[in-house]
Amino acid sequence: MKKFLKFVVGAAGAAAAGFGAYCAYKKLTGKDEADDDFDDDIDDFDLDEENEDESPEYVSLNIKPEDAADEVKDALDDAKDAVEDAAEDIKDAFN
Image 1 (cartoon, helix red, strand yellow):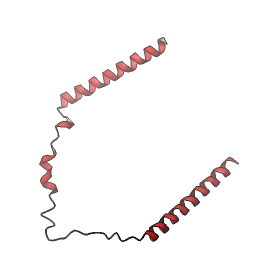
Image 2 (cartoon, rainbow, N blue to C red):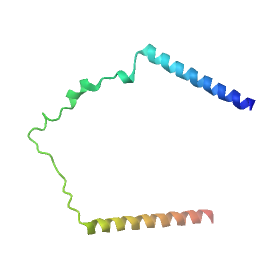
Image 3 (cartoon, rainbow, N blue to C red):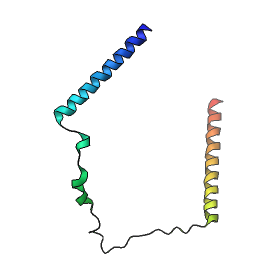
Image 4 (cartoon, rainbow, N blue to C red):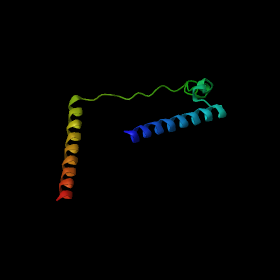
């Protein structure tokens, strides 16, 4: 129990020393992520002026339920085959 208590106190001391070093570094460098102001960069990302003549492109989502069901069945069959192959490889590895 004495060794465990010594370990806990040592770990807490090391964590406190690390946190103190971190705070000192932040204070000395004057850098703080919370002070970053991203409002100045908004003008760089204004895409409305560049694409005034272009209309947005839309993707058609005309999917039939039967086609979706077939795709799901095919994906499940592929997954089943992959699992069977993996099981066979594991079985061979242990034999």
